[in-house]
Structures are given as C-alpha cells and as structure tokens.
Image (cartoon, rainbow, N blue to C red; front, top):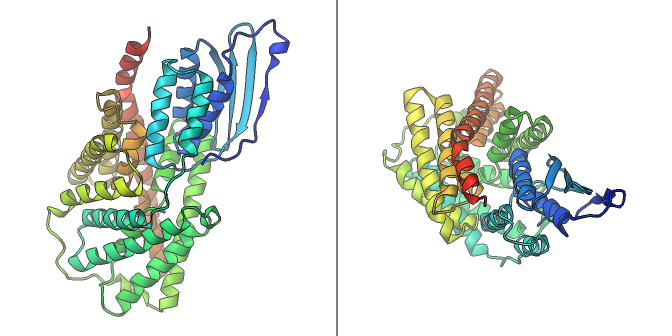
Length: 430
C-alpha cells in the first residue's frame, strides 16, 4: 500500500492569467510516481514515464525530480504553472498490482484516460484487499526454494532441506503479511530461525555442511534487486537514490548475517563442522533446467504473477539463465553476470513491446533471483562467522565487481534496446 502523502501543492496560476492545465493532472502524476516508487522501480524510469505522460496530455514537464523518499514535479502549459512536492516510500508490490499499474501507465502515455479516472484506478490497484492465504505462501515458497536450490546443484538430502526450510519461511511470510510492525525484524527473525534449524541438522548429521542451502530459504530477504538497482542508478548518475538503495541493501545483508550468526551460536556449532566439504553426489546436469520451471511456478504463487504475464516471465528467466551459464563458461562469473543482465534487459524490453505486452519490470524481477547477486554477498559475509577475514575481504571485492557487472549489463542492454522503445513511441503518436 502507498504510504500517506506528506505533500504540498503550489500552483502559481493565480499569478499567470488563466489556467488550461488538465484538471487533476498534477495529482495524477504524483500518485503514479508514488505507486511506481512503492513498486521499487528505478528513479530514471519513473522520471521518463512522467515526462511521457505530460507530453501525451499536452503539457510541458519543466522539472521532474524523483528520489526514493520524495518527488518534485513542475508542469506548465505556457499560460500557467503548477508545482507538486510529495513524500513517498520505496518498496515492492505484488507483481499482479505492478502489471495493472503498467496497463494504466500505457493508457496515460497515450492520453486514453482522464487524470481523475487515473487517480481512481491507482487507488483501486494499490488498495485492493488481498485474501490472507497461508497455503499459497507455504506452497509457493517451498516450490520457489526448491527451484532455486536445483540451480545450485544440491544433493537429494540438501534439496529436501530446501523444501522444508522454504515451507518454514513461507509460513513466516504468510503470518507477517498483514503485520507491518514485523517488517523491520523479519529478516533477522527469519535468518535466526532458518539458520538454527539448518545448523542443528548439520550438528545431528542430517545434512552435510554447505552454506548454499541457506540461500534458497533466505533469498526472499536478500536485497539483490535493491543492490543491483542502486548500482544501476549510480551508473546512470543518480547519486542520491543509488546511494540510498545501496545503504538499505547493505543494512539488510548485515541484519541477515546477524541472524545467521545468532543461530550458529545458539546451536553451538564450530566453524570447522559446517565449513567441511561433503562428498555426496549432486543432482545431474539436468537439474538447473528443470529448476527454472519449478522456480517459475513458485514465483507465480509467491509473487502473485498474472496468468497473462507468465509466458513472458518464463521466456526472460530462461534467456537470463542460459546467458548466465554461457558467460560463466566462456569468461567466468563476472562476464556471466554482465551477459545475463544485458540479456534480461533486452528480452524484457522486447517482450514489453511485443504482442505479449508483458511489463518490463514484471518480467525482470524474477530474473534477478536467477542472477543471485545478493546471494553472493550473503555467502561472502557469512564467512565472517568463521573468522576468515582475508577470505571475506576477497569475496566482498568480487561481490562489488559482480554488482558493477550487473549494473553495466542493465545499462548496455537498455542502450541496445532503446531503438525498440523509440520505434514503439513513434508508432503510438498521432
């Protein structure tokens, strides 16, 4: 839900003679900006969309400045001007709401809806009551965790732990869905409970020591999207918004790490016991490819993806994973992250402009979990639990480079895909 607006609207049209600005347009623009920010969309994308909407309604966007915490919009029709400053809050909406929001944006970019109708539609999309469904969360996260686990080539025993830990996390997410006060402590609490169960299983010999099993179970809270978007915004010279997202992502990673270390200390497991390599035979080469399908099904339930968007989501997921694998094979992990990110951006943009009309943001969010940028950071930070500081520093440098590779992939992919956007834009103009 979009937070209450701490907004002030300054309209100096009383100084100018007459006002031909469309009624409610300024309010419509601020509500769209707040909705997109609540969905976690990058600030430069929001600014571009707002300018396109202004052009469609025949007004000039003299100033559009968007940050994760507030937006400033100044519009003019030549005779009068209007200024809006409103508070907002970043977040992540269910993908079915994001999809409906993009449908509204497409209509607004072609002036097919009045601003007043647009405001009502936004309220309907954001404030829609969602049925509290424990089964959907538990089943969805179990499937999601299983699919992501298969991408890591685990053993059968580890995969069963992925299923069990995923069900526990799904239960926690389901319980906290309508309890916003738990949002701040949820990463720590979940990491503590999941790691405690995992390390207890290691201590009792039920599973061999492999920290990668924690990745599928905790990946929902790992801020890979936030960190990658922050790097993307920094690379695009949006320093304030990019830096704020990076700080947010690092804090969440530290909270997760704190929860894992607390779980380790409660169980009383020594670093040598959980760091030891195991000799069990992992699943075959086919596992990651089946895992993509399983993962997509889990995302469908967990993130409430619309049926009409599922083909596009699966196409982007598959293309991203294949590019990631190819890049890893050719030149290593950094090139794999770059190639996967660039492919994700280009394919997502193409599908948005194709007959499928899958919103770009809806299709790329699941693909970010395939790139697993946050997981790399979490595993690297987790080596601190074993006091292996030199290894941690080396790994953290690789994590930073991985985020750079992903952000560069996003930028290069956007540059290559830009002609597609321009062509579609010209087609939509009268």
